Image (tube, rainbow, N blue to C red):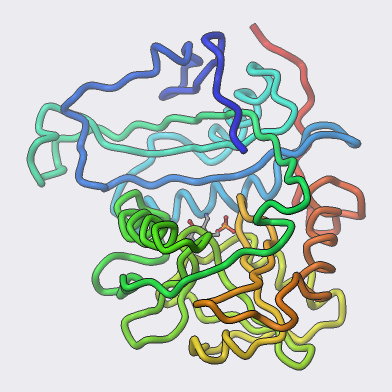
Length: 313
Ligand code: PMP
């Protein structure tokens, strides 16, 4: 759960740290969905505030911008340092970081982008992830197959975490909620399982873990993390096309994402998954993931970047 910012909150905008209220842009900012962003988490001690997979998210931000032909006017190191400094200046203990890149300029009302300037903002807001028993993450989520099709890779670029790609997610989530489900299950243009509105999907069948290819889904960083963790736990992980009836018949289903972390799914289209409660493999991976992000185990892949709270003024 995101904690609303206070008036003292500071935002990084194009190299400057500015008060929350002054982090504004002109009404002519390009508003056609051409922009890219990231979402990443910083977790609280024991070993001190640490950002999970900071450089991997920054790398994906640059890949997304490259795909959309946007030149980010900063270096990766600068953005990594700014993300840490925004956490320090806001004295956040547990946070969600949202760097985003967008275009602005007087020709923002036109489809032409050549005269637009590119800007970068980094927001950091507090995150409180206390889910008491009985809430969706504790009981497992219900999904409903969406009437919307996930992106065809020749329609929008699915490897980019691009603003405009999220209209599909927002519509699908809205539809799923209106139907009483927690989230949407989106299928690709061929009818194979793609992902949820803001998370990747895995199934467990006969002890083996499978996830669909990322042709029509985001290349999730948590997806890659869980793949690594699952293999280190001795589990077989494969990437292969999944049909929705295979999802119905799976022993376990779970979603992965920076926000979702590892969230078991216990119902799809009104059908119970497995025993209808979070399964043992999803629960184990959820626990191992929590150990990694909270620095409670070795960090052989150097996934954590420690942020010391040396406040600069
Ligand atoms: N798919 C979509 C559409 C998403 O928005 C997200 C969240 N960024 C994910 C998958 C999971 O990606 P990650 O694990 O990198 O957060």
